Image (cartoon, rainbow over all chains, first blue to last red):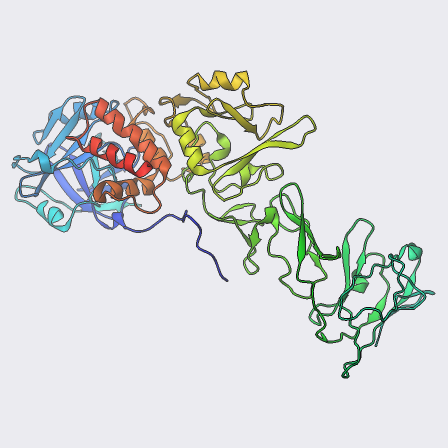
Length: 170
Length: 428
């Protein structure tokens, strides 16, 4: 059977398998906990014996920037708040590792290091950042790392960042 | 050589008798034709309602030097309605079908095919006879002899196996709306896409309608796989990327037909109101046609002008929130979105204890863009080059998001402005 190539391929292209990279789970509890998990998108996950479920805001909830220092090491993530997400700002403002700019963004730092180079911190990623919620009302945000390079992902393991195991819920 | 079909009744037909004349008054038996093909049409009305027991067709041929030859090509029964019923063909792979031919039941027959003696000169020109959609309904030879006939269901599936007197199986590739039909797959090639007449739709979505919200206020555009706005009787799709609008004149004949190509469509989305009201398609200040209400809805219609001057908010199966003129719309309600094929990410739920989802958000528009298109947008922003498969619609939707982010002072240190520039370049 011979097919001519259509003028414009309408098929979904699979040029770059972005979800092959892990998703960073930022669990917003009094002591910041991080986890890496894949594949995503996720329905939910289990971390430290607690179930977190997707809260239904969708796979994209807001833009996010990876906060880097001048050496391009990733120190945290900036989550740009949509106008209807002040509840998240209210929730996070008491957390010591989060800097809240009300109605604008949350800056979540993975360690004590906060020497951000803004020129290297303007990703405006919008790949995957769902909001999860546990049964007892704790929130977590997932951040797709599809556009981070290997060195940047490696730099997440900087001293002070606490990583734990997480398992997806199917 | 004599071809004979025999039966049990009393009437018989011997078509090759010298005493029998064709409709041009020429005897069926003649030696006046040298190296020519002739279509001989013989009136069988005398035998209507009679039982025919035997039909003879005599041919002879001699292949000696300086001799002459007679060969027969095909014999068909041409019905009063123009239908062509195949009796038998020179092609030995094509079986004669007297027994199943209407009006010829009860006959048995014996046919000996003769080989092609090589006198088939000419007969290289074929004329297509189409219907109002451009579908080929009949082919005729240069001398007007019908050689192929086909009929179709509304979406192009052939109603019955086509009838052909041609001795090749590939007599006609160009069928429904004149598009080429692949002999093996049965798919019709529409340029941008293949269409399955069996399914009644395209195999792939419209390249610019992948997520169905290119024109959110035009429900018939929501399904990117549909053919010709699901109105295949009145509308055709010339390129696989567009549909053709026709109005009807006072005599209900199509008029003012226009092909709306995707680039033009995209420009229309940018430049004017493109909406749907009571089944009418409006394009800027021009009513370009209808697909439902085929009334005298001519260009310059006051209602169209009114629509063009107004920012339209439509309500379709729930609330449809306006994001701004020429921008994106979102439809509330998970059921509605699921109906649009967004099942994977459409469920709009609310967080316990929080307010509902605000649909006028970048989040809502990003849902409309869809995951894969969002990835392609990301690739554009990372590399600066539009990846293959990235739709204009996604670019336009993201443009709205970026403009809002900048207006809200959330432009990521100028990143959104840079993206706007990339989008504008890609849209050129």
